[in-house]
Length: 203
Image (cartoon, rainbow, N blue to C red; front, side, top):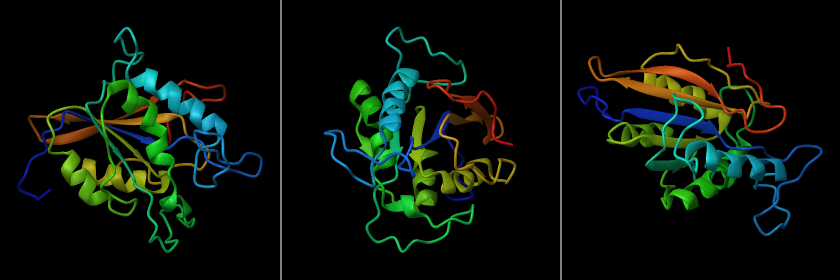
């Protein structure tokens, strides 16, 4: 988005992809096959719960800060990634993963919306420029190491937390547009979906 173009998207919601493989659990495909780039079982549980969080059957959202998204973005798997470092100092191995897309696939099926996978994990600036020029609520699923940088672009400053903790999969960062100033504000909304989810923001 150029400096002279004001954003129009009323609400941008950003989530980290759901739980990934660790020392105790391996990733599995929807058909149950082992895959290191896929979600673990708990991640698939979160993906299903997120579908209902963002599109409840009675159309009443559990948090008034949320909205039913009408456009979906997720980082596409990047086969050309060279393991660059993200902003928490770790190698960005997630850039090749299918997890951002998998995380919102149940929601896309429920809403009958296609997922925009045109941008790789490092191409978030272009994705945000496009996402900010919409007229409807947008949901973005991305790698956690990039979310603070995404927030910086949306907000136009670095007032958001600059590190997303490795262990947090349970938050929605909600950016609401002030149409009088053309700027966004940030609210951190706990998902409260699975056992162990925290009710506290990232500081």
